[in-house]
Length: 131
Image (cartoon, rainbow, N blue to C red):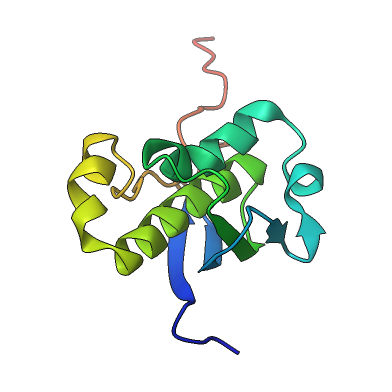
C-alpha cells in the first residue's frame, strides 16, 4: 500500500475523477494499468496532464500511478492535472505560489447544464411556427 514517500491526491473536472499516487522515481506513468502514452495518445492531452511537473521543472523526477473514472479523455486529463498539482503541494508546500500563478490549483467548476423539460436540450428549443 502507500508508504511515507507516496503522495496521494484527488482531482475532478466535469464528471471525471482522478486519483493520483506520486512517488520519487524515474518518470514512469501508469494510468488505469496502461502506459501513459497509450491512455492519452495525443500530445495536447499529454502536455495538459504533465503541466504541473513542467512548471516546477521536475519532468522525470516522479513515478505516477493514477486511476481515472468518468467523463471523457479531456476531462480526465484536466482532473489528472489538478490531482498531480495537489500531490506536489502535499510534498512541498513552498510550491503553492508557483502552481497558483499558473492556475493549477483551481478546480474548474464548470459542469454540463441540465436538460429542461419541454425542450430537446439544455438551451435548444423546438422549432417555433407562427402559422
